[in-house]
Length: 284
View 1: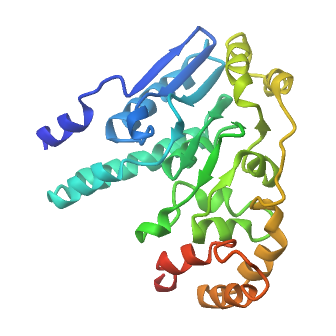
View 2: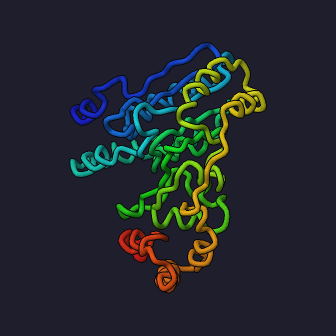
View 3: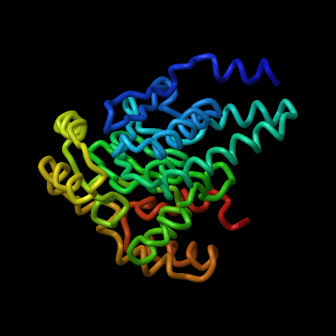
C-alpha cells in the first residue's frame, strides 16, 4: 500500500495554495492530467479548506485550475489500479473523501468563488457546482459522463441537476452531454459569465476583497461580467424537445420518445440518443 500511495502522491505540488491574508486560492495543478483529483489532492484541499474556514482573517476562498481544464473529474486510473490490486479499502476511502470535500464546499461558512475555465466534469463539477459563485467563460465545457462507464452521477449532482429547468437535469445526467458556459448561465448551473480574456483581471480584483460580504463580492464580479451568447444550436435552445422526451417515467420510454423524434430531427445525435443507448442506462 505504501508503494501505491507513493506512486500517486509523489508530486507534492499537484495542488497549490496561494493568496493573501484575506483571500486564499486553491489551485489545481495537474494540467497534464486535466487536473483529475486523486487521493493526495483531495486530502490536501480538505485540510486547507477546513483551516481557512476557522481562520478569522480569511474572508474568501477562490478555486481554479491550471491549464486547459478546471478539473476533468476524479482519477479513475488511481481507483482502478487500487481495486485491481485488491486494495478495496483504499479506493473506498478515496471515494468517501472526495464526496466529503464536496460537502465541505457546499456547507462552507465563507464565500467560495469557483473560476471554472475549460473542462469541468464529474468530481470537478462536484467541487465547483457547490460554490457560492460559479464563474464560467466561453471555453467552459461541463458534463456528467458517469453513465458512459457504467456508473451513476454522483458528487451531489442529484442536488444541482434537479434544480435545472424542466427535464434538463435528467437529460444531462442520462446522456453525459456536454454543455457550454453560456448555456450554463442560462440554465442556472453557473452564476456569472466572464470572457476568458478578462478572467485574470477578475482574479486580480478578487485579490483586493477584504470582506465576506457576498454583495460586495458580487459587485466586483459584475464589473467583468459579460452577457453570454446563447447559441441557437446549444443545449439550452433544445429545452422544449428535451422536456417532451425526458419527462417520461422510464429510460425505455425516454429512448422510444427519442427514436420517434428522429423522424423530425436531421442530426441523429442531436439529443444524445447514441450516448443514451451506449451508456447502459436501460440496465439501471
